[in-house]
Length: 323
Ligand code: HEM
Image (cartoon, rainbow, N blue to C red; front, side):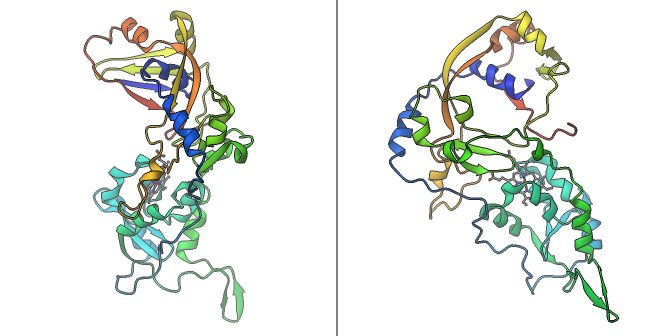
């Protein structure tokens, strides 16, 4: 079963699959509000990444640039390090987007996707280390023949090239009172959990205080062109926003919504090390009133309710090529 939702639809339609009320989470929120949480900032980095390792071979940026296919392997450079990430591509949480940096220097990309600025991400990258860039390539302004030149090393030229990547996060909506309401887990994509003290201040968590979970920038949706795609592998149907609102009855329910990774941060310890993924404390949870059409009604009307047992949802917060 394949479907695509706008953020709005996802919020509305999720009500159809939420069968268990997790209000207990809010009680837990109260208990945890007594404790000072460990806040994982994006900048507290202790891992040494991209530093020269004298025992490894040297590869030029020209050599790195040749490795941009599955056959030749996917290579990239970060600081002074050269990496072969071929076997990591399938496991990358951000999917094939990692290939944007194949054959290039990674810095410009991670300057935009700042959630990579974490120890465990650097540790992963170092696992794929194969070599060093040639020494002395970082030149910047150099004195050549007694004259100052804006001489660029290969790697800097490459990095500049990548800086032309459009930063789609810049169009994310303005978020108000962030410090008051949230612990921010990553800025790009924006992931933030509601502070326990805020959670327990009302039974229904107000929208502007509800936890935010994004996997990319906030998607751009033109509601007049929007189509919800639903399929079962054999056939695919698509419904417009008007189809959904006019052809089906709308319902409102009150339910708790929790991120399945809520409290993941508590799993970080000396034995287990750092668990991958947003290090939520207790606040990736909230109560809300949800309004939307029933998934069951939609599936029945399309004749898709007979065979399938599971529904898989795809959000629009994956790579969207255009605004
Ligand atoms: C052009 C380069 C890259 C882009 C555009 C990119 C994009 C992304 C995106 C969009 C996510 C968020 C996924 C989600 O929240 O569902 C992500 C997560 C992640 N990426 Fe990348 N990525 C790139 C390169 C890399 C590289 C080279 C590595 C390591 C070898 C890497 C490791 C990771 C890890 C570990 C996460 C999960 C972070 C977490 O724990 O929350 N990425 N990436």
